[in-house]
Image 1 (cartoon, one colour):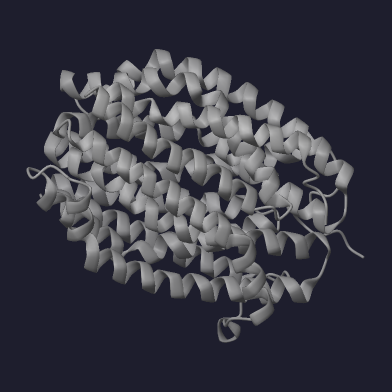
Image 2 (cartoon, helix red, strand yellow; image 1 turned 90 degrees about the horizontal axis):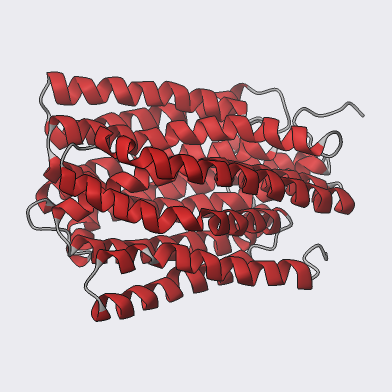
Length: 444
């Protein structure tokens, strides 16, 4: 039987993980550029209040979108298992089920986002001075959110079969579209925050159309036939069984971040702008880890399909070492560069100071975040998605919310809000390490 492209069931593990993760990393960087460019343009050409409006919308967008991204992980794991086992019919049915799920999810997310935006922003206590701009930005963003959901679904399909390059190409194109349209709509046409949101929506739809084109024109087993898009019951059941725990986990953790954002919002527009600006830097800092975790999920999924259990264990060790070494270097770089990077978003000293406070709290905990992400990526690859869900919901949501409610009532200080993130990372890592070494997570 001819060797399939993208198979990771033999060869150098370190080389395969790195080569697969590099396009993911670059692609994730360009995806991160969406909101980052929005913040830079808004902060420099519209003002700090508009910057606060964009930044306050971030956790809300993440909550809804991350749910469907987690659900797409179910399709990705299932397809990687079929692909590793060389079951072409299973790949075909899973791909078409995944696209059908993406379409339905897009419709639902758009309706919920557009209709409930004012209510959501009121619940998270967005400052009255910026709420009108927040509503404008968020509603327009959700009108184009289908592009983001479809793109992420197709990217999951391509990653499952070992193709991490095409998603990268699409993100590069759409990121440049976003940058050009941001400047055109805001600087030239003076459209304000609405122009930024429209630019982002157009760019996201472009990436979705390009990704669909690749599936439709492919000659491989994962080729998409538009007329065959439907729910194949057994594959839908498996996709939901694997993906729903991750979807729920992502949504609940994102909801906890909304609660965290609510507690940040009470400190005013400068705190919203400063913390929001640092989260953009934070997003770039942890991208290598997220990319390696995604690479491990595909690696483990394919090798589970091929029943290469010793290779899975070896890959888990190598992936963990690479990830930890990478984040240690990046943590040092973040500490020294943050004061200068924050000035890209705003020259206001108050905004910068709030960003630096957050950096001092989060940077020391990045190693623990890395270990949590890597172990979760490994477990998802073997289909053990319930364990990451329970641990991360318990630590990154329940514990984090309890922490911030208690500490902010005792000490009205934003430092304790920021500390909610690293403290919860330490707790989740401790629990996951115990499970990893004590449980038989490779059992059928």
